[in-house]
Image 1: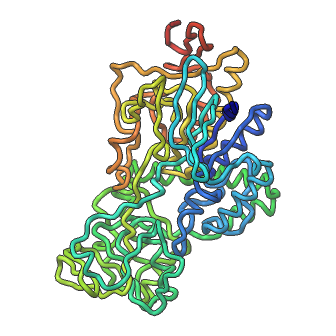
Image 2: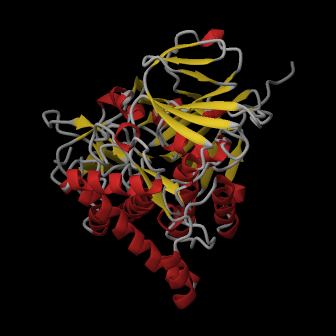
Image 3: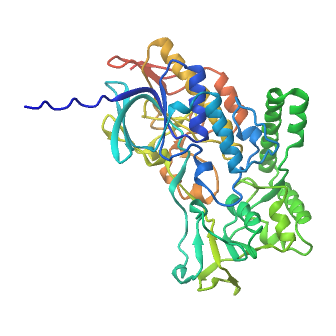
Length: 501
């Protein structure tokens, strides 16, 4: 009798990082420096690193934050452009991988579909799809650097008559490489960061571009090149100059946001004044650039060197604010009676959110209802052991928060090592009042709040959007309310105001 083959050994890693975007690469670097003896593996579903910056390929794609704050604290941004395009950001991320010897830790084409926590072993059993087969790994800790966008689909509302349109309809998330819009009339539906990026880029080759919006957005011109940062790096050197520029820009971002929160009417008037100076005489600023909400109730759209305003001044683009009645064979019919002729329609209508990239989570066989969990210190979830998620700031650069979360994870792992714990988990008081995770009015957030974790009324359960507060919390005591530790097969030891179990 032929013996059965031995079962394939299950690979174990100390920390499994899911996603090789800006969050996952950052986590891998912090772990490599703070915990060099830990075995860390990064699994990326796509065939390249970069996450959002590799996925989105539409013309003009760029950051909407300066790279002195959107970049990593540990890696200076050396390009002259502070507002960078996707290719520059991808080069930067590739350098971060190479300089920190992380490339061998990343495995591409590995899609995590399920993670099961096993308390008796104090590890996760992770199901991964790769190359048409299913493999299993175990991990002591999971860091979910998956962001919160759904990568396999964007958001497109139902447009009546869509099937009648004889031209091409494109969503920016799935931009065709062979799309030729040269000399064509393009209508971009939307008013957010993607739309204001697309319009000036498309206007370089299109016959004319119209940004069609139902509701205006606050738009501000910003310099593409940060002259102060350039001077600081020249005077102080690249490393010190970058560090100072980063602090200056963090303070500037916070000051602008705080001013808009405290003095919304004055902020609105100032933004309108700036817009008026950028737009041609007689332009209806109040109709097209005067939103019904206050500044920073939704994210302000930054346009480097005022490129959106420039193509409007030059007559290569315009803005129409109205409601769509139906698509027609040749364009879009509006409620106000106007018909927009189009050869190409771009639906820059937003994104869909998805927690953990759609990964199914279970704890000891029980499915995790993510919407029933409460976030702890912005990264752990109540009732879910040994797992961190990464959600950046909505009112500042995403990566600022990522750095803080990664440093906290490193401190947490060091504490567990020092005391012999293999499990960390948080427990929220069942009577604690909660509210949505993100206090943000953007449509893509509002559509998905019911699927996201909750936050509590105070630290450490509050989802802070203040970098300086988070830094103070990071530098404060590691042990906080609700945080517990245990050794497998032993009684739990509680931290903070918890009780020994």
